[in-house]
Amino acid sequence: MEECCTPHARETNHYDLVVIGAGSAGFSAAITAAEQQARVALIGHGTIGGTCVNTGCVPSKTMIRAAEAVHHARNASRFPGLTGQANVTDWHSMVGAKDDLVADLRQRKYTDLLPRYEHITYLEGRARLTDCGVWIGERAVAADKIVITTGGRSAVPDIAGMAEVPFLTSTTALELAHLPKSLLVIGAGYIGCELAQMFARMGVAVTIVSRRGLLPDAEPEISAALTGFFADDDIGVVSGITYRRIAKTDGDIVLTVERNGEEAQLRAEHVLVATGRTPNTDGLDLEKAGIAQHKNGAIRIDERMRTTRAGTYAAGDVTGRDLFVYMAAYGAKLAARNALGGDALVYDNAAMPRIVFTDPQVASVGHTVASARAAGFDTKTSVVPLDQVPRAIAARDTRGLIKLVADAKTDRLLGAHILAPEGADSIQTAALAIHHGMTVCELAATIFPYLTNVEGLKLAAQAFEKDVVRLSCCAG
Image (cartoon, rainbow, N blue to C red; front, side):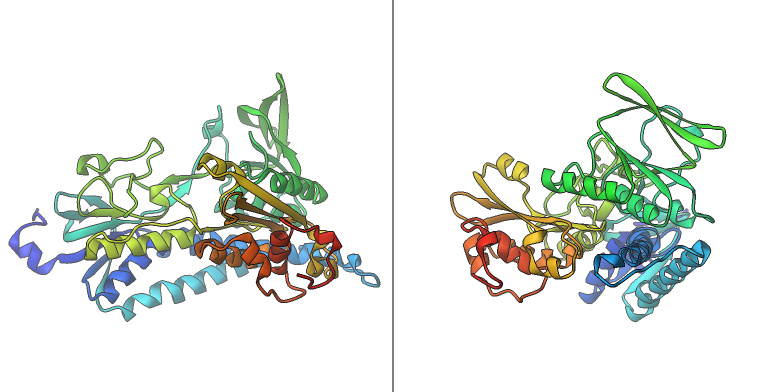
């Protein structure tokens, strides 16, 4: 077997950069390097494109949008003179359309891109690290620098009996041949909340279970309000519990929990596990390569995307940091540039938008009150309910609120948190305000278009000094 560092191997099989993992982060790193005329090997294993296009963002969001269509048709009567109705008549066709969309985007945004970059060589196979590069099966590939972008997969909670239960993940739940009658969702982070509401609006009896309630890291006003809106969708929310055991009994899944010293049993046709992500590091030989990991297996990196092995970088879900596809791509781009250009770039997530595609949507950027105080800030806040936002009033849908967090000493905006229908489309304005160091006074003085959702940010900024109930339309 030929070693990767022999002279012959370096002549025929040597790359400036090897990227392990062909998802969104891997493609970002590979394309960034290729644009700098670097010779790149992109190593993929399994379906090209990674989590987002295949099993994450794309399939879930199209199904969530379909569920919203059902919901809004049924709620047309909020406008006087209208009635509406919608039902799922062909679940199989919906799943097929989702699969077609995934296949189309995977082809156009991943497979078809490779021939356009002559400096990228795509290699298929399982990779493991060596002293001077990687092995792909029995093939040695030498590299000056390496970026690891192998992503993650659904984590399985440590509940007694879990290994014997046929549970669903966020991937397999969207592949079901038939809509279940009932569903138990374990985990109330963004994946659990999104899929719980989607299935409920499709006609499934859904109960979501968690230790700390819905979106426990969100601002408490948002978590509380969303819990109420879930109740309106007939979604059961069980929190403040300890998991005891789970089993399949008489055709159903039975989860036993303990709350306030008493055991209770929750029963459903299917159980969906949505308790986070586990990094894909199996088989990479990280320990042998001298690459440190966190307790959950995630690769340790510094602010410049460097691992503990010189010349090796990592980005995306495999690092356990900021599990959003756009942050994976951003981090991978930095990793590639640092690998090829001298480690000058620093990862910055201070103005990172975070979105949960429930309805209403949850959108946030920057600090919460808790994180701001932990960082040493003296904070002040404003909260404006959506019934003070003209766009929401005109749409006859005032579910939600906007909360701003500011530095009490400097007036600088530190965080923005929106719970609103289509709230995700407003958060980037707040992200830009935070990125450029705006004060809430400056935000309040900025011109916003009337009868838009984003105008709510102006009202929330004004609310630090004024009672917005006493303002006329467009008053500033």
